[in-house]
Image 1 (spheres, helix red, strand yellow):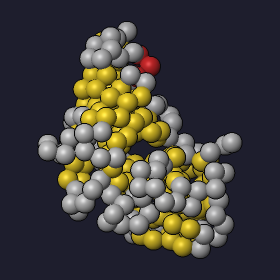
Image 2 (cartoon, rainbow over the protein chains, first blue to last red):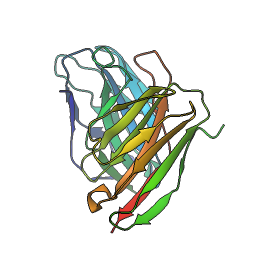
Image 3 (cartoon, rainbow over the protein chains, first blue to last red):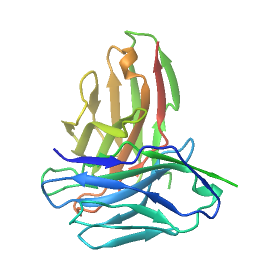
Length: 115
Length: 114
């Protein structure tokens, strides 16, 4: 079945550092790829998404490029802030295989940004 | 708009007790979902619904039941709670149709089963 693997955390950074969170996936269909973010005490919210190979999703200074050849969707930000401290989830949706727009999530990566 | 709301926010149960978690959305979404979140395991789908009156099993459905009697509500029931069901439960909803539709999440319910 479909699966998503992302790097384990926690990732601890200083403010203004560069952030990369690796995400790779396994899917037999044509997945759409997502990054969700969970701030402390809150539910998940969509950060960015990409629907086909070579698409780049971007939002709030974060970027991720859909790489079909390496089955990856790595998340990057050039200069993090304390407010970026959160748990980040990579996910895929393969509607061609199953009804309901179901998402398969990675295990999550906790990021802590120190001032 | 309130978006997706969940009731209650916290609950402590004893083994064998029952309870119902309520999810409500005011976005007129067709699809609704229940997930559980456990440390290091991401979110796992328990049950989902593609419309009023319909439900389907997800990845980890055992020990849970659901109902979707009204389009805006999706209920998750635990008939006989077990310590393995200690988790944070999230409800989500999305539009019908487009393959890239965003799922909108509620704030979660933290459940502890003693």
